[in-house]
Length: 159
Image (cartoon, rainbow, N blue to C red; front, top):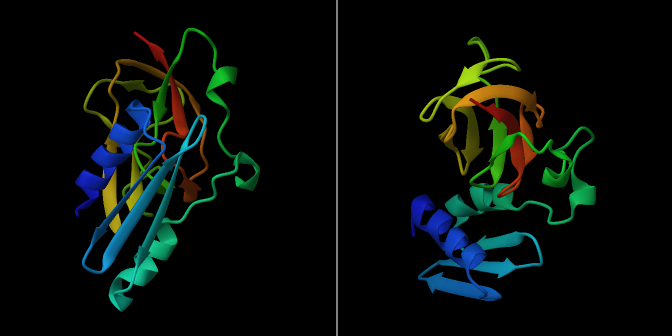
């Protein structure tokens, strides 16, 4: 099962009233449980080379476990903004490499398809693109911090 299939499965569970789904393939097992407002993703593998990346994919389900300065709840977002959310669990990066500038800053204009950040998951660097046109009004996550699935990353004032 590749990462894209896992993302699609998470979205399917999120959009349905399914409480839990478990899939086992040879030496790979994934269980996705739907809670009241979020999905908890638990992975386990018996292959030694997969254990380290899988363990790094575990993320705390409780908002209290977020680091100081973590994400702001979507309910606190101003009514005239759109939230760009994390499509996966991983580590949030604002720039492509330490010696490069940030993808975007507060006040920058974004449009659909513009890369706004990278999320590293299982040693893969995934470019996250804006799906809206507007201006970045707030960056909700610190650089190099862990993010959860569906966690708000940016607030955008639509154009």
